[in-house]
Length: 363
Image 1 (cartoon, rainbow, N blue to C red):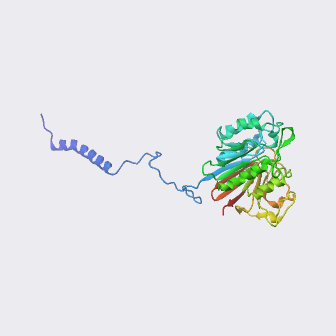
Image 2 (cartoon, helix red, strand yellow):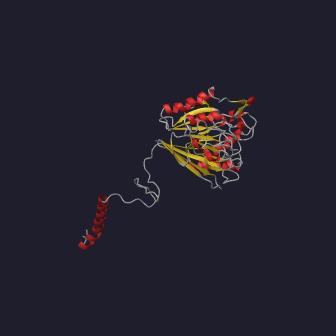
Image 3 (cartoon, rainbow, N blue to C red):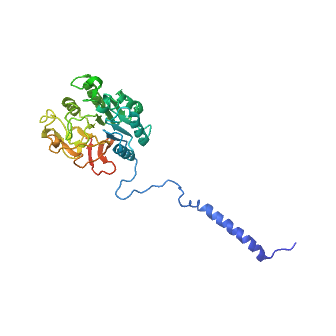
């Protein structure tokens, strides 16, 4: 066998040695970097300038609310707005399909946009309570309760603590001033059964140390819109006496939000169709819990808007309003509640620009 020269031997060995050296170097220096676009280990992502860096956030409840919805383009725009906000639940403040026999169509519109299991929590309005323009029983069937632990009659008078474990908000939904079949208007007069039920629901939240109470119902009392005090003066004063934090209504197709209103020595009673400066507990947009109640009408869920009247005797009670003749806007109220703060804003649907915001802090 012919032997190889030193030069021939080295030329065969050198590449092998070089390859081994490179392999050992790679093992010592760790794994190679992943290709561009391939995730490796988790990294901390910096926040855009002017925003809060991502941290472990405090527990919070995020919900939306609006009433007077219908089946038209406006309703779909508002549902699109709600969908884009990604709330945990929505309070629907009455007046849904506006036409008997189309309740399922209304429900399908909601679930197609928000999902079949989304908590779209309803209370009746006047258009479906007596069956002429719909039936609340049909709405309840196709948009059933999704909140665990609900107490009462869903769709008419109920409350639920949310979240169920260690709740931050008690939602209380009632139906004063609403006519049911055969002209039967539910009795929320002083010391009636429904009056006592509402008072106990508010008191119970305080007893359980739930930070926030939010009352929802279709009819308002104070308004710069079309209607008078259909919810009833006494019942409205009950909500103030019990220090409900936020009362949400529909019925008047406007947005209007009051200052914080409270009863005390210079405001013994809140009287509709008049104004008393003594009832203004706080007149700016940053309020303190316990001083009074904020009333917000959000009848801007999709149907045609009503005019607002800045000369209404009750107008000094209001911090903001929007109607057909002034800053017209369909949209939703968007609320976030933590243990220490309730923050709310009006979010207009696509094509509108009116906004409003306020917050209530706990002592």
